[in-house]
Image (cartoon, rainbow, N blue to C red):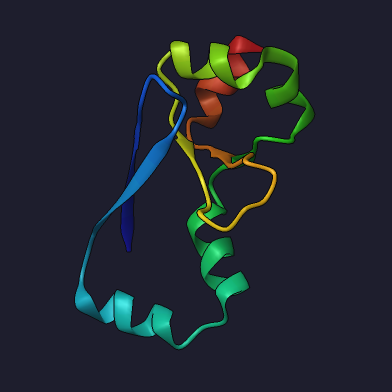
Length: 89
């Protein structure tokens, strides 16, 4: 399964699914926490101390994408470009 995150100047990101129907069907047979884990396993949580140190605004301004969960109460999300985050820190 391949997911492509697109960031926006507002810091909000969106996911675009690029893959087979088989992957989608298999994901429907999982619990919500399993799907979230699959989508975010290559990301860094916005609450991570590295992300808090540089700030989401600076990360997005440098070209980083933030994937957000519609049902996340804290409005945090996941930073998609870990190498960029490391360079900024």
